[in-house]
Each structure stands twice: as structure tokens, then as C-alpha cells.
Image (tube, rainbow, N blue to C red; front, side, top):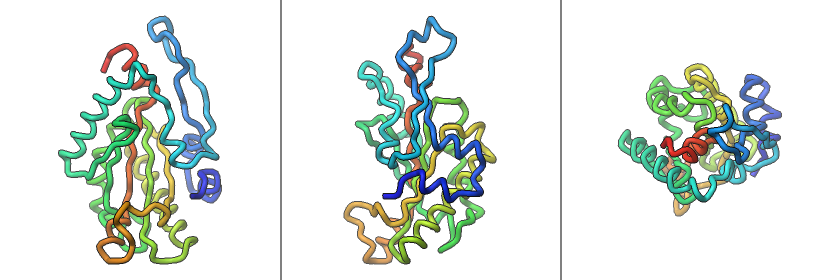
Length: 222
């Protein structure tokens, strides 16, 4: 799997603020939230991390895990009621919503379809509060085409998604994107049939609890 550094080095059109957001992540340092106006911050370089490594950050302390899992379970239920295919990982701490790529982009195109905004708009609330959530976009393709072509296609589609959220979201400091090409097909869904290829062309949106949500769990505000 290609690293984030190689990905962002080729994204000349990506706004600087988004490039910086992809290269660092704000993590909370253990502190007494009631004695300080704001949490201390620690910058962690993500430029050499794979998507799997990135999804493990930030770590949720054991005492706060039940609160976080309960909160994220409610988020998963809300997205599921809106019609999204929803899964969880990290034992329920991270929510994954999937949108078929064919509902976002025309074949081999990188411009969002007119109806794509209706599918992306429900995720704008995750950007309202700085540091509450980290949002990761993983753009997948089927295996039709060369490796370079597929990475280029999913890379440009990630840029289009960035452009949408940068325009309409309150802030995108904790938004990251990964072009996956055909590197991670769905389990038990090979690219050997038209239906299989259609299923593998997908956008996965990972909703990860951010440092502010973890702090809210520490103070039992959630």
C-alpha cells in the first residue's frame, strides 16, 4: 500500500491547509481538563503512516472506552437509518460508512455528480467542532486498468471530495484522504464479475473519535 507522503507529494492542487492537516494529527496529552482552559497538544507526524496505522490514532483510554463506544454506536445507528451501509472497527470506537463510487462519479471521471452532494451533506456535522472527530476518506476502485491509472483515478477523486468538504464544512483540520485504487477489495467480493467490480468501487468514510470527544468522555459530557 502506498504511503501518505507519496500521495500528498503529487497533489499540487491540494490547498495548503489540507496538506498540513494530512501530515499531522492533534492528540490529547493526559491532563486534568477541569484545571486547564484547553488540553495540551502533541503533534504526531502522519506522513509515513498507512491508513491502517492512521486509523489507530488517537488512542482511547480504557476508562473512556465505554462512553466512546456508546456514543459512536448512536452515530452508526443514525447513519444506518439514513440508508448508508455502516460497519464499525476498533471494537465499536470507529464508524465506517460506505458510499458506492458510481453514485458519486461517472465511470472513469473525477468530477462529483450533481447528486453526490446529497450523499456527502450528512457528514458535514462531523466537522462542526474542531477536534471532535477525525474523518478519513478511503477511495477504492475495481481492478480494471493499470496500477498507475487506478491510483491516479482514486487520487483525483479524493481531491474532488476534499474540494467539496473544504467548501461546505465548518473546518477540515482533521480530514485525511487515501487513494486505495484496487489494493483492498471487499472480502468475499472479487473483481471477477460486473457486480463484484461495482461493489469494490466505493468510498469508505471513517469517523474516528477525536481528542475533544475523548476529553468530553473524561468529563462525562457525552
